[in-house]
Length: 245
Ligand code: DC
Image 1: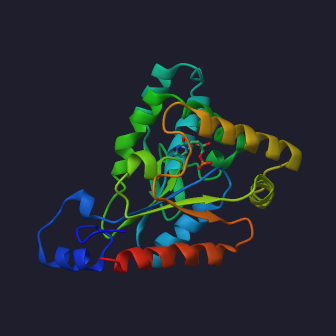
Image 2: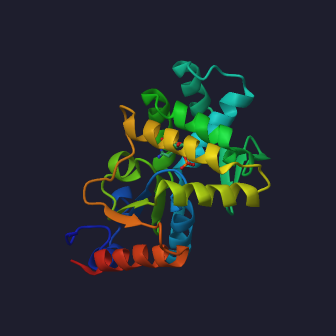
């Protein structure tokens, strides 16, 4: 479990109040990684709300890069050009909305085409590298919930709690279907399941930062859990990790 110097422990936080420690490492991070449509975004946002922590939706950064490349007609196999796109992203996150160059693209980045493109360009090591700094900047007091594929393995390896959240492919396809229909997009279960399996395979088999549980990650299968149960489980784990000295 976590030691006395872990940013998760209450003793550490107490000490923080009386010291002038400003190191980023002192800011607690909970990572929630998992495959597409596993519900990690919803769970992560609610855990962040409950703890009054900041929230990083790292997939949104890959989606923004994909959207920017698609609208700018950048060749999707041109790694150098894609790195330029990632490096030039002018994005802001405000109250759950995502803006690119001042335009609200919250809906646009959720389109399946953008998600699939994001998964493809995310396989380029240099594109991933171009987004590292941006992700690290989300680590702000009092804490951060970071959701993605490599939050616990690569971006925040010293996170105090790492969760790998998943659900069966069928449960995830059904959730994605309802999500898309709810947002006014058209959707087809058969195609969704196929896309989802392809995207899982690509995310899990890429050479750099593949989707996999981080060492020491707590596994959470949400196939038969409500959102509230999943959120509560993460909060319980965090409570336990915070208390253990
Ligand atoms: O979580 P999401 O579906 O919004 O992510 C879209 C794609 O971005 C996903 O298929 C793979 C990529 N991604 C990644 O490679 N690493 C992350 N930390 C987050 C997302």
